[in-house]
Length: 245
Ligand SMILES: [Fe+2]
Image (cartoon, rainbow, N blue to C red):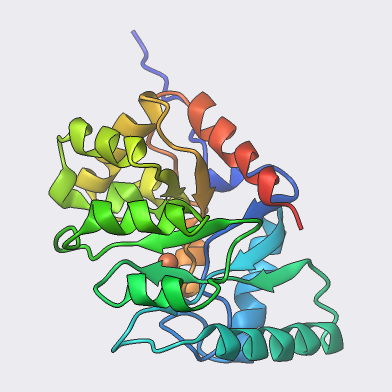
């Protein structure tokens, strides 16, 4: 008997035309993402070739490492959009931020307006090493201020491996979940892939993002999707149209 391999599905085959990416690091020179304008242009045009239609890019605000401010990001956003126009890169593009939940975050959102993806949706992340102290208090206070937290790449917090209850608790605390596209290709390893499968199968993922920082990320979006069925991922990809500019 011959065993035929199922044709491989690449991630780029599943990306809907006009896909709205809500997580990336494409503003040049302000975090560990695009190094300069040329690098930024190259990443954007590569993603556009895959069908990406809009970008809400999200530079890190990470005290002590990437001390970006809302004002600094706005300024860089304007410069970048002007540069794109001059170079005939025509794509809806704006900037928000990816905020690290640390011990400075609460004082920040109590004292100034956060950069949101759209409306009151704000992208937050945690350390990959351990959950932040006071995580649930911070999430509660953030929502009291009127924000809706979207947790970036929940599947990458491997301290929650095999702990569906921990994810349920986060959802119950008001977090929406944004999966990284590359997670379903095994790019970040087996544990991240396993958590991704679990969260997708449980219907717990709300949105998706590329989290592209550099060329290797962009190129790896052509890798094979390691899921048995794609329907939940396709749904999640389409959900991003909620953030259309
Ligand atoms: Fe990110």
